[in-house]
Amino acid sequence: MEQRSYPKVTVVGAGNVGASTALLLMLKDLADVVMIDVAEGLAKGKALDIMHMRSNERFGPVIQGTADYADTVNSDIMVVTAGVPRKPGMTREDLLDVNAGIVSQVIDNALSYSPNAIYIFVTNPLDVMTNLAYRLSGLPKQRLMGMGGVLDTARFTYAIAEQTGANPGQIDALVIGAHGEAMLPLPRFSKVDGKPISELLDADSIDRVVENTIKGGAAVVELLQTGSAFYAPASSIVAMIESILRDDGRILSTCALLEGEYGIEGVYMCVPTLLGPEGVKEIVELDLQEEERVQLQASAASIRASVEALSV
Ligand code: APR
Image 1 (cartoon, protein in one colour):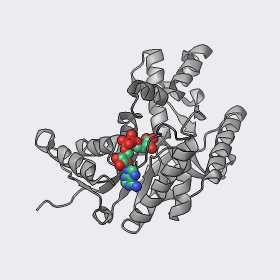
Image 2: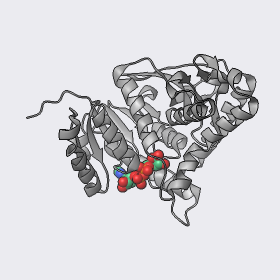
Image 3: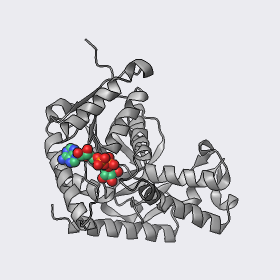
């Protein structure tokens, strides 16, 4: 019998984002994975398919597909990607309520089996879902977070690399705020080889880079036609999990609860954080200029309004 020597990560939702996350966790030897979905065959089939890779890829952990939450018991980390995409005839508010219903159902089912896990929410609209999950779950703020800023930062890094010709490894970029149109890429805090991009690019080029970042997700949707991005979202989830498990001291833009930081009270949104085995260890407070601060507070107000409009 195989002995368990890896942390246990449950991925809720075996769709594009969930299965890609599970695959990366396997390939990077990070965790045993339970992938759970209401579509039982989908979760079981994808898990079996990944296990068939094992002899080629020689990864250590194992993956199991299921529709039964009992299999998720004592997870160290729960990643929630369950949700539905928008369908013809549905308004954005309909989608919001449908996904809010799914998220609340997932919390009901998952919490009793893994009350001590760190929860990472991914379902969109991310900021609203993470705020809702905090309200419904009663989990401590350190152990509940959302994935959004890491993905936006990855897209910002890509756009800077395209514009400057630099290698992504030379770039240290940051996006904070809402995970959507109101996100806040921060050129002042984004550097190539330690130099702020404001010293390397003119104002028009910076505007273009910022716009490409904000529209990065929509560009993928437009090309795919049938769904939204999943490889970069999965990679961003795994970056957070890696940082949590390894306590590696990376600063990652995480959707975390603000309680006075940046002058914002009681709202989850993306800010620079240090993650570790206890979850969100620290929120890093940047010295924002007045204009950046005002934009961040406007983001917070719009997230708060959407959360208050929820019927769940
Ligand atoms: N419990 C478990 N799984 C569920 C539930 C539920 N209550 N409701 C739906 N699912 C599953 C679906 O069966 C589907 O397999 O969630 C999966 C979603 O997968 P996709 O439709 O492929 O969506 P995906 O691209 O993975 O995106 C998932 O992440 O980035 C966000 O905006 C995206 O909210 C979306 C989520």
